[in-house]
Length: 338
Image (cartoon, helix red, strand yellow):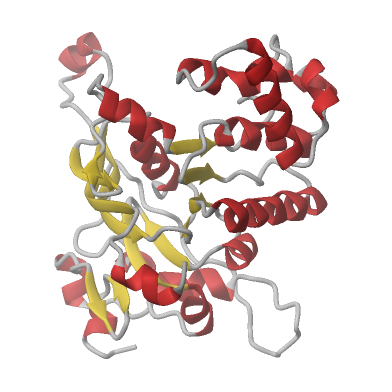
């Protein structure tokens, strides 16, 4: 698909004002005795973005910023408190049990972070990869099932003979390849990748990332890629969204975000990356601590750590808006102070 075609077609995935509230209250009797109110965490708080067909959006941020919760909301592992997800123009209502919802599920799959925990240790690889084919009724007989499994294993760089083995007989990188084969079984258009390489050795990470890029090119896949590793994000993404305390603070094309980050938090993250080119640019560790999500700061959530914060930042929540070709939520950028 050409760039012009992508611009004329609607996005494959549209996320609108997505929010998730978790109840983390103490048990009822404890609250009664200690006279405590219910307590809630805004894990995701009004997130909106689009992903075009064949493209990759990466979400980055410190641990606990809500990246993985967004991933689980998209595939229906959590029900949103507010907002909606549109896939190919259709609203994804995962609580519905209908043929339309089942068809959407086939086209949207997930690759999990830990290949040691996401594969059933009692099943052979053949059963693991074949499970989606059986569940969605995509094969007619055992011969067709075996042929599909063999093809999927070869597509991710494994042998058809590996189908007889158990997950514990493989390395971490090979297990993640099995997870990718399972995700590809239903021929999806969109994969949600929740830190798929963070549990792997660095050398193996590169192999898995290159495999994912090859599969994207061959099959026209779209990715939502969750990561805290900016080097990985730079390698795989087309656009990058930066999250902080459940909110998106900046969303921009990859090249632009890495060359000229606008939001102070994005700058802080990029300034902490080791300078392999020895350009002389100073590198500083990320300053301050993430606030308690049970008691988030008023106004801009980043203002306690921001060197550009003023009275407005402490009292007024910044609006998510388009400015000069990027999307951002920052008073200092809006006012031209940085």
